[in-house]
Image (cartoon, rainbow, N blue to C red; front, side, top):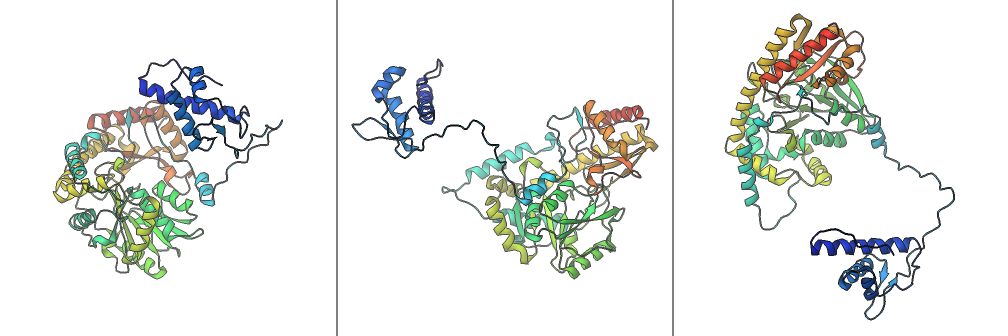
Length: 488
């Protein structure tokens, strides 16, 4: 039998537990190898303890563990036996058959066939990735205090919560949406989700079947496109211009996904006429509209644009909000504002998905909203990101001038920079050279339904919320040098 004792120098309790585990493993291996046949007796615990230099209690505990797992049969006053019903190991064939791969579902196959989502595990020295925030902007002290308060208020009995979210958080969000977005809803219309991505996934699974058509902006948020494709949807991309998604010739569909207050990634606002056309289309077709209001808090020229849901009279619009762009994407807290007829099915789907969102974080967010800290924080980071935006635009104009065209500058946390002297076919070359220089640049082509378009210029989605002004200027200077190398 293999020796279970090693020459470690851990404490006595750790050493006993480790020795017991090694005894268990050694005996299992010998049973599997056929050294001990089913029904055969093992040496006594006293004999094995003496042989291995262990205490008898350690060996006895190992035997008890093996008996609990069904490997041994033990009784008082008798030596342990290998369980009689334990299957004998079969001799390995001379040529083992090829293992049959595990099959995945149709959903899994659709997801596997989707284009890969770019992800950089090693952050660049200067990174213009959209969606990341500056760590220094997070309200650490206020969040720590709110989280500690939430933990001390926990009831003596811990239990699963409401799948829709804490009632007090939903009530706080109801008031916040009315004050900040002019959106009137009931607290029971709100379902708290693990970030807007889970909200999109719930919508896809509950509102469309494989083969159903989904209207989507082109270009569009890539993870929304992948959610709908994985659900088996047939996408009907609609081109976006300065007035937002074109709505004059929408095909019949079950669902539409839009970012009307700040189109992702072009930055345009859905015009009043197109909002009315989209709502009328949904009413005619019995379709739902997902309104992703992902960064509505950041309006740099005028006040926030009223959400599409505020105009909805037919109950077609599902409003999707998040704190990922105001507090942190690591919190994974978002919310859906649902038409009354969808409340119950979404609550049930949330329950079977993950029961509910983490309640400590929900309680902490509730406190921040209730005492005004959250809205003060939003005003502060809006001002701070406005300063970053100004630094970026000034640097782009100074160093790149007429070589670029900039759009989407009035709102949000990113701008779109078109490289006038560089064709779309060289966009990947630019981002690859930038990566080699530890500069994170991200092309816009992958957000289009048809990424390859020879008539289109190279474009970059430049996020600035995670950088300070000096880093922004340095990043633009490095971009300038790269474009000169490429002859643009």
